[in-house]
Length: 176
Image (cartoon, rainbow, N blue to C red; front, side, top):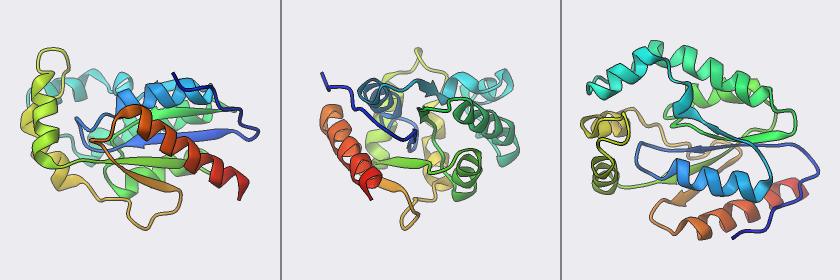
């Protein structure tokens, strides 16, 4: 169990990466540790997007536009901060989210293709995302290397260690 972090300033954080990297697991632990609400990005997909992904059809930028706008609204609605899980695969997607709230930070969960595919395949039947879309996720991914406010972590690291690393990084940014 990670002790709750007392933050003076609002903290908005996006846990991002391709499907299967562990966004939901890390997001849940960080939200609890930071005393912030968790916004599970998948919960805001319209039914049309869910059908496409279930059927193995990759989402387009147009498909994602309304979803990203809604996620930005959800972040902005939490004046004291929030933790969002969202693939945020392209820089343009991250910029849309950054436009919604000041000082948005990202934890990029980096994972290799084989591990992501195996994880997505293992949850078949319990999640709408088809493992046939993992290739598309990697093809679409524009890693946030060099972007401000981004911490890159190896997704294979145990979640408690990742959470501790992210919390230390956030504390360093708040002190700066």
